Amino acid sequence: MLDKPNIVAIGDYFINCELINDILNDYLKEFSLNIQCVDWKLKSFEELQETLLLMEKEGPNMISLPENIQKLMIGAEIIIVHYCPVPAYIIEKSNNLKMICCMRAGVENIDIESVR
Image 1: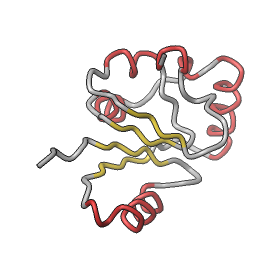
Image 2 (image 1 turned 90 degrees about the vertical axis):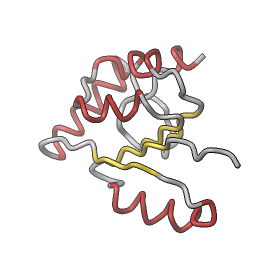
Image 3 (image 1 turned 60 degrees about the vertical axis):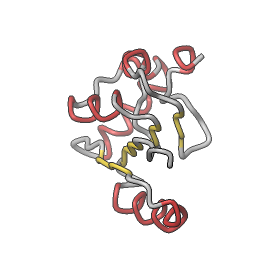
Image 4 (image 1 turned 45 degrees about the vertical axis):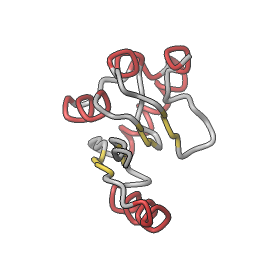
């Protein structure tokens, strides 16, 4: 029997953990996966907009993540994000990382060079 992968999902202002858990549990319930989800909380919608603009212009490495999110991401085999950045330092420290799933069309929030 295979071990269940360590899956970490990061919610945000638009797609929060409650919604992520509802969707993933609905579609993946037959696999009974353990998915840890935490919301990436910013002070306001305006702060989120400013952060997203900075990320689009300068990349995800310009954004500092809370320590609890960093720890979860570094220990994950699968990371699921919407807008939350996945900077180089997370990818480089993640020894077991197998997949990053982005729930949006663009991947400006993921350091693609570090993934390669």
